[in-house]
Every structure is written in C-alpha cells, then in structure tokens.
Image 1 (cartoon, helix red, strand yellow):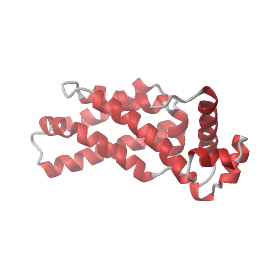
Image 2 (cartoon, helix red, strand yellow):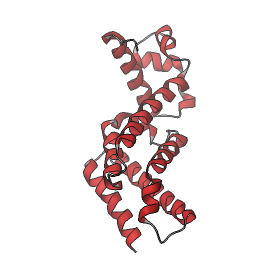
Image 3 (cartoon, one colour):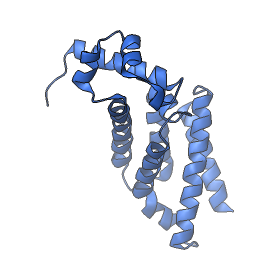
Image 4 (tube, one colour):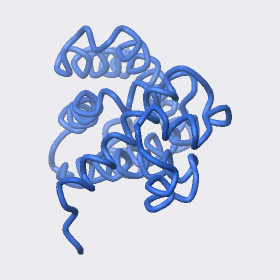
Length: 184
C-alpha cells in the first residue's frame, strides 16, 4: 500500500472534519461539494481527486469506523466475556467522538448503526446461546435485539451529552442492565 504524505493526510483530515461539521448541522442530501470545499478551504479538483461525491466521502468515514469496530470485535477472543467485548466497542466510539457524534446523530445513517449491531451479534451469538440456555433460539434473538438497541439508545444519549461519563462507566451501565435483566 502506498504511504500517504503529510500534506495529503492534512487535506483528507480537513475534508473529513468539514463534512462532519456540516453533517452536524444538516442532512447529507443538503450538503454541496462547493459548500464543503469552501469550509475546508480547498478547491473542487482537490475534493474530486479523492472522492466521487459527498456520499462517497461519508461512506469512507463510516467504513473507517466500521473497520475499527470490526477489528476490535475480532480481536476479542471467544474466551473473553461479553463485558470486555462491550467495553471495547464503547472505547472505540469514545476514541472516535467527532465521527460518532455525526454518524449516531440525527443526520446519521441508521443502516450504519444496524451494521454495527449485526457485527456484534455475529461475534457474540454463541456466547449468548451458552448463557441463556432456558430460552429458545428465537427468544435469544429477541433478547439480543432488546439489549443491542437499548444499548444504542444509551450510547446515543451519551454522545448527545458530549461523552460526559467515561467509557468504563457507560460499559458498566450497559453490562449491569443486561445482567440484571437476564437474572430476572
């Protein structure tokens, strides 16, 4: 893979920061390349050197975050428990606050969030089935969805409150809620 020079990295970072700023203010469909280029202080040719359009740029930002989450999830060994798994996901979100504020925000792509949930489900499905032996496979799927989308609600609130609590506190809250619901 070709190494990216410092100026290119700076330009790509500036474009990314600019699109995230604009997406924090309005829907992606309302953002123009001209508007983005003005904010990033680049010309249109520079933008088109790296991206096909605004959607391509956002897709690449989503893919970057998705790959970080996927790598973290895949590095979590199956012998490690769900608690460690949840903490790793929360930590990645915390480390990528700017992107997550937008991607999980009101103008974010809800399908992107579903992809993350599905990725987590694939990794943890066996462990869920081992822990929830008194439930059928169908019930486990419902329980997982309840936990997953409830967790997303907690994460979205955490992001809205500008990451007021630490990743450890948020993961502990999610873990405690899951454990208490399963125990009852």
